[in-house]
Length: 152
Image (tube, rainbow, N blue to C red; front, side):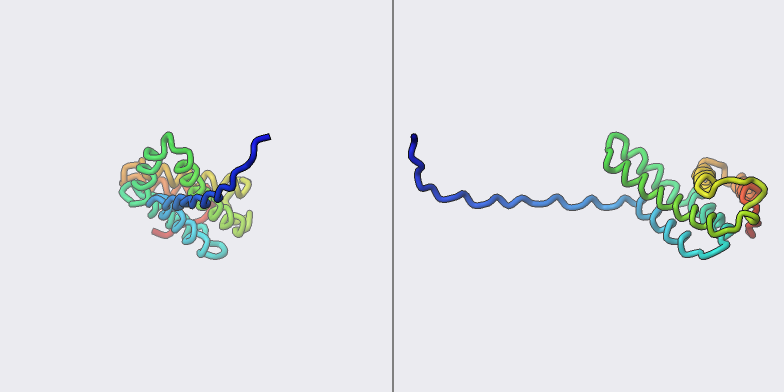
């Protein structure tokens, strides 16, 4: 049996932890929008629709940031997941607003809150692709969908 030599133990390697990724501009803007929507309180669908229309206007910074982030995260699973998570926070904030609105005040369509929140977010995101002159008409369509009047 071979004899063990007295060898001093190697010093432990210090590994540097990778710094956490910084949030993209799109993530920061989406999370700020989710916080804004979350702070609107009860029966706030008209204000939420105005906030969505402003955030997703064709020339709004959020629209551009999300478009750039979407392209930048192609092939980057971590970045794509972070962007999707931030977007989901906006949808959840919308869902909470819809749930806080009585069903009788949500328009004529009996739609589950999670579905209506998703539809509202998808419609808001589509505003970025509309000509600026069409945004008012599209916002009017959202008021019909939700049964809530939105003052300009």
